[in-house]
Amino acid sequence: MGKELWKGNEAIAEAAIRAGCDCFFGYPITPQSEVPEYMSVHLPQHGGVFVQSESEIAAINMVYGAGGAGMRAMTSSSSPGISLKQEGITYLAGAEVPAVIVNCMRGGPGLGTIQPSQADYYQATRGGGNGDYRTVVLAPSNVQETVDFVQEAFDIADQYRNPVMVVCDGLIGQMMEPIEWRPVPKRDLPPKTWAANGTKNHTGRNIINSLFIAPEDCDDHNVHLAKKYAEIERSEVRWEERDCDDADIVITAYGTPARIALTALEALRAEGIKVGLFRPITLWPFPEKALHDLAGQSHVKAFLDVELSSTGQMLDDVRLAVEGRKPISYLGHAGGAMPTVEEMAACAREALKEAQ
Amino acid sequence: MAIVYQKSAGLTDAELHYCPGCNHGIIHKLVAESLVELGLLDGAIGVCPVGCSVFAYNYFNCDMLEAAHGRAPAVATGVKRTHPDQAVFTYQGDGDLASIGAAEIVHAAMRGEKFTTIFVNNAIYGMTGGQMAPTTLIGQRATTCQSGRTVEQAGMPIRMAEMLSTLDGCVYAERVCVTDVANVNKAKRAIKKAFEKQMAREGFTFIEVLSTCPTNWGMTPIKAIQWLKDNMIPYYPLGVIKDKAMEVK
Ligand SMILES: Cc1ncc(C[n+]2csc(CCOP(=O)(O)OP(=O)(O)O)c2C)c(N)n1
Ligand code: SF4
Ligand SMILES: [Mg+2]
Image (cartoon, rainbow over all chains, first blue to last red; front, top):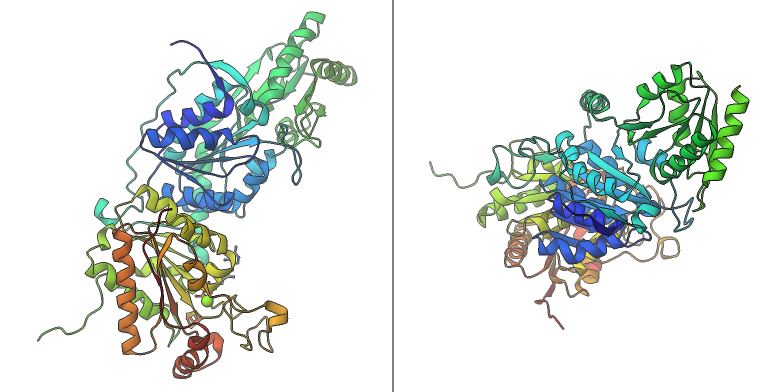
């Protein structure tokens, strides 16, 4: 199959249609508005439903309704809009309604900026809504991965009856790249016998609900969810390692910073400095064990975490995985400024010097 | 022996949890009977609110979704747009619909979503213990306006049926109550008509049911009925507020 040039956001929408997305509900916000725009034209042509909602809160609740009635439902937004969706996401998780949510992240806090950011890591991985729950979080670092992951996200959501988030920094949504519509792994999925789509369509009565008023019932439900999350942690964790086998220093980064880190890696290797890259692909489940094991390797002297965040958010997970075995430095920019190759290289040199 | 009256097949055998004298139970019955009589029950999908009727999913004998507080119209939009041939309804209280969910109901009506909303207006937040609702009457006491609601503090109560009727997408809005047999019969006719119009794809249909909350009003059930007649009906007049097909201009 030949390569085609696609803009990230439009590719996200097209990927969803190819994955059998039945309906899309969204609200405009930069830098993701091309997703609802593309959907408004193309989804109905494929027999699907597009509604521009009155707010992100309404959009995620439309997803809850359609997903709860058995449809493949999707919404997308950018950071402030994703904040509004948190109420709906915890209900989706609690009622075990599958859904795909794309966050094309921009800078915050508050209105922040429309420039790319990764400052919604906590919100995505810790669950920005109330209660004990997790969403699967896929973090592509280019447009090709984005279209692959959006397609897979629907299967993952259906398999576990859980919301799946695809988070890309605004850069990925806005840039054009050559991609291939290559086949993505398809899962064997059971029919949705649980869907609230009318009793004539199944036996018994189906109820989509996150309310368990009796303490024992709510406890049981949470135990059930925790078991599911443990299963996802065992089966769905993904990451990529580049040149980590002999690395003195390992850069941890995801999304666009991971791409910049690859260039920094090559530049430093040319200087004779052995750098590796550890790139989490699922932010939850985080590749904790793999990073923990890497930190235990004697050749690894230090880590450098790089994010589009001023304080560092994934940094917490890196620390938890490294468990103090090696020093961790941090380089972060917020508000749309990108770390440069030179900056990363300088930080890596410095971190290594300190460690030695 | 001939059976002259029995529980509607539209209701399950679950025991209702409502307080004695609460009107929620009667309203459930009317919705259930309407779905059965119109032959819609096995395709029906209901959305319940957060409020005293949060457990309505245990009572309606059809598929149900429990929505977040106020979001039922958005949830119903997702259901109905993907299941256009099936009967879809929301069942919502006045705090749920007229306060936290004001945006969702207005925009569902604006879009002319083809589902039916049963709006149970008891002029109070029942479930949380009697706080002021947007529908609480001037002078009416609630736990957050203990000397009675004042205009200065909280403005005048909202009339949802009239407000939604200004939207072209809302094709049918009627206000009813269930205080006596005559009104129960009128309420039933209104609910049935709303479902018929929904299935004819005319647009958004809205039935506001004035309802009692003896517990939080601090009255006996009989006194509560009288209070509703004396105080609510003058401010929230009964009858058809709107019955007009959508004009596409
Ligand atoms: C987001 C959110 N805010 C507040 C609540 C608490 N709460 C539960 S029911 C309710 C009021 C319900 O009143 P109404 O809609 O009038 O229904 P009624 O109980 O009177 O039938 C409130 C405020 C909640 N569950 N969720
Ligand atoms: S608190 Fe009021 S509305 Fe709720 S069940 Fe009791 S009487 Fe009915
Ligand atoms: Mg109420």
